[in-house]
Image (cartoon, rainbow, N blue to C red):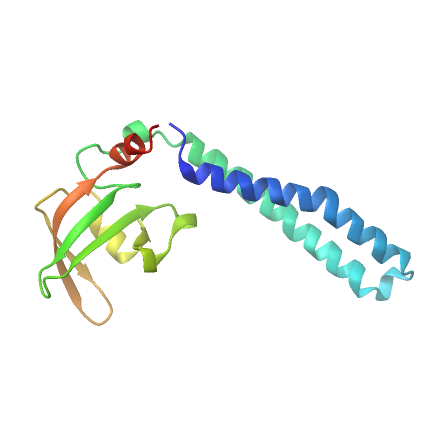
Length: 161
């Protein structure tokens, strides 16, 4: 199964490669044309950008490799884990919340997309429908009941994978 995050990372990888192969050499050529490299701010900026992009390229390649090596079949099919959507009932307020346990690159708290390393993410790992979850936050302790768990397997199935 191919995870959607792979597409996002590969897009960034291709943009980074293009900038390294096309944009940076052009910027260096222009900067060199200005003469003395020892006091050439454009040249220094282009070289710094080149070093940054080379590092980012390496990071992206490693991250894609790590995610590709992830054996999705080993993730739980009957409880929450990476890639799961968890619907909760706040036992104190009666509010309902939905969280998606995602890779760090996909985190967006405003959309309920949280990392498994966050306090709520850690508390939700391994939970099933009907479980109670206690999340210790800095100012309070929030308690939820798990109303529904949609695992990564269900989510990928719904995407037609």
